[in-house]
Image 1 (tube, rainbow, N blue to C red):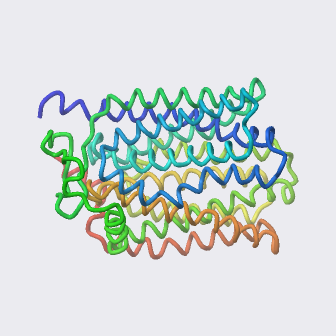
Image 2 (image 1 turned 180 degrees about the vertical axis):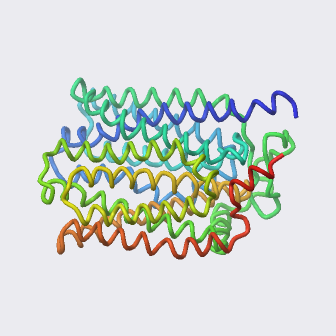
Image 3 (image 1 turned 180 degrees about the horizontal axis):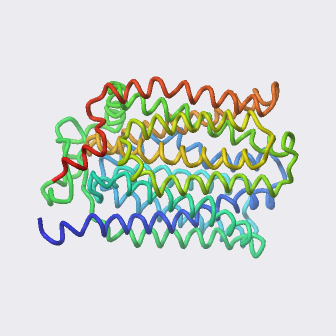
Length: 432
């Protein structure tokens, strides 16, 4: 192996990590500033909520096509284009704001296009990562990536965004645009595979494939709908991928459902001020950062099956603990444990999927996974909101704990039956 080949994965990964850190901080500022901006320029509560919802709608509409495009085109280039799209949208939004022309429809369109860029970027990035990181380091790499995103978006970005909005409405948006440009510049130096899609292409492709791996325009590529159908069928007919996808949908529905009623628990049951709500949310983010930092080592130490099933059980137990107490320290610890367990689950599950899915299918499989995982989140919010309204927020947390614990059974069955799920200690010992 040449020196260039040996170094390139690490260099490419650090560029991806830097790009993720840059855009995560900007995204956090935008997440905090966009609702504030909507409230400031719009008078209608429905319009304000519509702008917030517009950023998530693209996941339902474009997750599958975005995954297909991530398998048909160079993923690094798709990520750069997504960054440039979002930067341009933010610049245009700032110009409209400065001209006092930022009304409901332009703001709604901006939020929607920012969501489209997020879908394209995420589907391509999760498909790109295995080509810049050795397989035996995927969990550690994903853990660092998720931890950086959590710190940048959920801790640093949102706090700074709220403060900067008081300085000037456009300031967080301008910095977010700059963060996307910085991300695009970093990604220009990443060299990854040029995927080929369709039954005729092999499962392996990478930077070493050389120019011969790049197909001519439209040569041998099936139609977009055929690509999407192949991706959906690939996930549905694989018992392990199917189990991981369904589990992700259940977990995210429970998590967002609990988030939706958590503020009610804090204010009406625990009788705490609004500032305490933010502090308790931060406890969950801190737990997530710790989980991202140790997920790779934890999986290596105990194996993937115990890491996945054990942290599912930990999430369920934390939900039951919140339901059973009115002691604030216990709630804070339980919420931190939830953030930790959810992060470890995500890191190990994503790394496992990246390991067992052929490169040519990674984009489409990611699109299917994200569509289901994110598509269940609004449903979870509605169900848990209804339970909270009729029986109280503690009942909603109890329901989430029970559902999560029950999810352990089918996912454990699928993991233990599949020979591709190897113990990480054995994988490390067998590695050359």
